[in-house]
Image 1: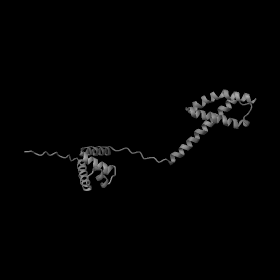
Image 2: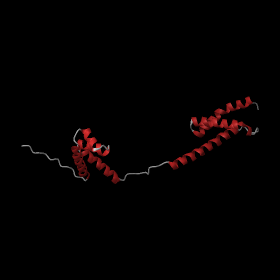
Image 3: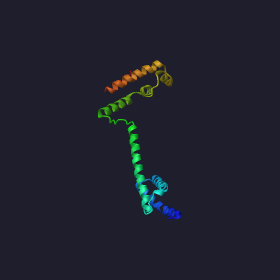
Length: 171
């Protein structure tokens, strides 16, 4: 077979190889890579090809075996990666934890806006008393006393003590 005949046969088989590769991989880019690898391997191993064998069946065999080898290689690679991956243990909050969290949020909503803001700054955001005092433009002692009252109010609200609103009688 002449070189021109071989090139012509290869060109005619490329669309069929692509279709088969796409059917195997279900990805256009992977299919093109697979066809390219197949043709490269066929050209480098051309001297090992049996003359009586069909070029079409030889190329499809190379493509399929290369696909299987890549699939096994990827499975080994991902298997090794999964061994090194740190997984958080699955945690599903219990109904008790969920109820406690909802109660805490409800209690937090009952606080005054100043108390909520101060708790957010210091407890959640981690600002120091000095930084919070500078942000709120109040003395540090005021921050400390307001924070103490906010924590005490949260404690009482979480225990189920709803503060009674007292009205002053005006004469």
